[in-house]
Every structure is written in structure tokens, then in C-alpha cells.
Length: 357
Image (cartoon, rainbow, N blue to C red):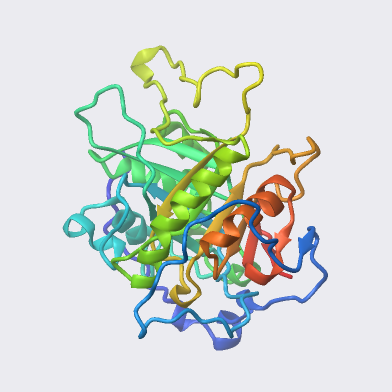
């Protein structure tokens, strides 16, 4: 339908003047527009021990964390069902994988490369949805902070990859530094609504997502912290009566009358209506700040007091998280909507606003 592009953009980020390249990383120091608390409270329950690390791979406790999150417009979170990957995720399966396909389009020299619209491509341990034809190899993705779940990207055609990028990932408006580009070049870099119809079953994300870097194939620190923090978050969330979902999201295919299965079954009176998914992810930068955690809080989320959640629609990045901090993070950030300043690397709001303190 669309076919794999063979032309590559000759545009390189390094070809831009240095003052323009650095512009998008400028940080404006203003009072935060969200609630914060300086430190993490002590745990109110027993927790796992902090993993021991090799002496040559220490955690950096000196560098300030605020601002260490590289700005991005969208994170494409690929559901691989695996808990670790090659050092470069695009090398998985000898290069035959979705991360490699997306980077072919969006990476340096890619057809849709745009230095002012940074897209983070990350693998996760979440399982992909299973299509009605189980013999088809399928991959699912989350788009964050757009809070969209794309259940079906069958690996039988490059059309679905093109549709994902063109219909959901590219920007709807270009940065003003693109004003000098030709009309055809501008048009190529913009999102096209008609591509969305190619992908079936796309839906809003309702679950809280707790993403923990566990990329041991890249760095032993994340490999050590990831599984321990994963288990600790699941335990603490369940203690707070937040339903932790572990199975693949079920979505009926077009051949099944366009009906979608509920994510976690109908709500039962007295049961928690808040759900979460906890998973390991690949490299996001900052191994020396392990454990690295991203918490995406979906739009419409309420606090423990049933008020509008101040961080609903945001992704909050934390570093130097240890098991003893998980209880406080769940209570302060997930339940009450406060950013813990001592761990805060940065954040992003739905729509692309970068959060700093």
C-alpha cells in the first residue's frame, strides 16, 4: 500500500548551525506548575534490599538529577514480551524488529528525520496483543505521552510501520526553524490523519504505567535494579488496592465484529477501578542514575481523595530509585500527585510540554 521507502533524507542534524541545534535543549527556569515535595518519605512497610553492584559501576549520587532527562516529543514503547535485549535494541533478531524499522524512518538520515521532534524508541517487557489469526506475528506499541495503545502492527508488511509513524508519531505542526524548507519537504514531515485508518483497534491508555529501566544487556546497574524494582512496585501498588495488570491487552480483530474486549473485565462493586502495568524497558539514558523509573499517569486519573490528579496526562522521570523508595513514590506521586524533587530527572505533559523544577 505505502511500501518501504527507499529514499533517505540528506538532512543531517549535525548540518544545522550549533546555535540552532542547542536551542531545543534550552531550559527555562520557572516555578513548577505542579505540586512537589522535597524528599521521599520513609517506607511504612518492609521492602526488598538494594541490589549490590560491581565496585567499578557505582551510582552517581553527586550530579543534580533535574534536567538530566533529554527532551522528547513522543516515546514509542514496543511490547516485546522480553525482559532484556541486545545493547542496541535495533540489533535484535539480526535487525528484523520494529525498533529498527521505526528508526529507519525517524533516525538520523531517515525519511522523516526531524531534529526538533525527538522520538524515543524503547522496548518493553509488556506482551503484545494477540490477533484473531494467531499465526500472524504481531507487535503492539504504546505512544506516550499521547496515551494511545496500538494493538496490531503485523510483521507482514511495512505499511503498518509507515501508518504508525505518519498517522500518530510525526508532528501536526513544524518548528519555526523549518520555515525555510520547501513545501514538499514540510509536507513530508507532517502527520497525516488518513494513515490512522490503516491501523485497527487503537485506543486510549487508561492504566497507570510504571516503566523501569532493566536493560542489563546495556548496563549491569540497570540489569540489577530493574527486576527488583519491578517486583517492589507491583507489591506496593497491590497493597494500595491498585489492580496490577500482567496479561496482554485483549482487542478483537476486524473479523470479530469490531468488538473490543474490556481491559480488565467489568468493574465489581467494592473493587479498585484504578489499574496499573509495571514493566521493564530498554535504555533511556543515565545508567549511572539507576534505578531509573518513568511513571505515566493517564488523563482523567483521580487522586486518593477522588480529586483531579495534578499529574494526570504526564510522564514523570525519576532516578536513583531504590526499593525503599517505592512505597513513598506510590503514595506521593501516584496516589497524591506530587513530584518528589530529590529523584526528579524531568517530565513531559500530554501535548509535549517539558516539565522541570
